Length: 408
Image 1 (cartoon, one colour):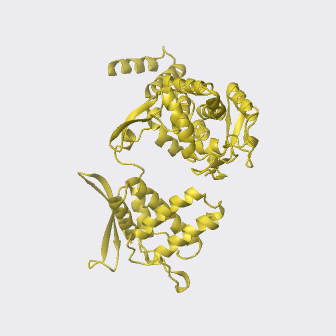
Image 2 (cartoon, rainbow, N blue to C red):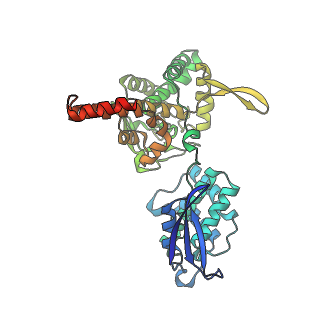
Image 3 (cartoon, rainbow, N blue to C red):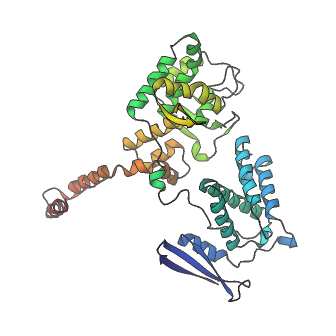
């Protein structure tokens, strides 16, 4: 039996769970969490039976290796097998999981063991790597439960937030201004007519840059776009190219979406289609040999020269020397598009769908600082609505107006 107690001190509010255990002389042990949700999940799972079915046992390391193999060769829970680059990232996280000194087999793990693992991650790894590793450990547990190796989830409710106390201020993305975007598009136009060699290269890159800027597509999505997904006034996003150029489906169902194009961008695409190299994958922006563009090659051959031409560079230290580097990454085109949707007053569900976010929380996390910047507009909307409903001359309306004047 576990009980939860709220604790408030100089470091803020935490939630302490007291639960029975044979390992402590008093018969009780304690675990502390930042949120009530985590504490409740811990309390529901602590002390629950999690014995290995049939008397078998599996180590955490073996479970992690099994999970990796499933990701690579089978695909988790009926999904596609993970792409090469995704597998590399999962292998990196698996290495971190195996680095930890697990003292128990998987079926004997209890919430305090997972809390200890979480604390070790935060003490020894970057916060981002710690969060991603713990998330993948949850996937390991889920996979082992499906296979019957364990019966309950000792990691339930134990998480790492994506940022610290000042995440909102420190985590804001940089978005080009309207003037910078005009300079960027103008630079693409100039590069497309600079000389014979550049004209040949930028016959491909110019429509790509305009497409990205006016649809908010991810770099992986326009690099993996096929002509079969291009229609009279829109494109359908269904696949992507990873960093090295391997083609596969988009990562989530939300990533599958329809994006409408301005007519002049469509005209650019159609003009490029007449020159586009043949490609086995029917790609819109293949290399000269017809293969998918690798991200590193796109940045070196198109993005970096584009930003230098547009004058969008900043000074940075490289091997002790000051060098000019691009002010933005290719994702700036996507972020700019999102910012204009927000500026135009589009509702959040529309923005979430257009950006291909699986959850509205993702939209808030990435663009929340822009949304928060519209409080004055929202306030005026509320005032306008009150006037429409109550009327400016109603007694209630006059009372509201006097109250607002006094407050100001």
